[in-house]
Amino acid sequence: MNTVLDMGRLTQTEKLRAMEELWEDLTRSADDYPSPEWHGAVLRDREEALKTGKDEFVPWEDAKRILREKTR
Image (cartoon, rainbow, N blue to C red):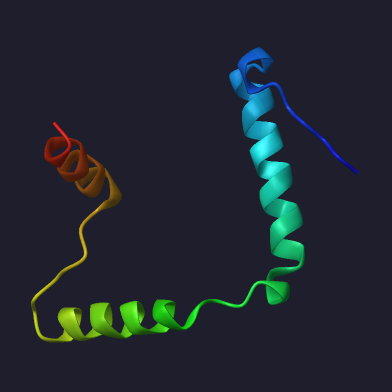
């Protein structure tokens, strides 16, 4: 099946629905998409940074604000 969506013609609600359906379909077969080896390395590095105090968790709203400020 070949499906093409004209994203410019979809409403925001339709786009969100399409995204949800795509995500649901992809997660049904998640085992078919193994994580690349580098994902594990990144996770280990981040865990180590948390343990040693080089990094910390921040609330999602704060993280979005920080990212927005960095991209200005």
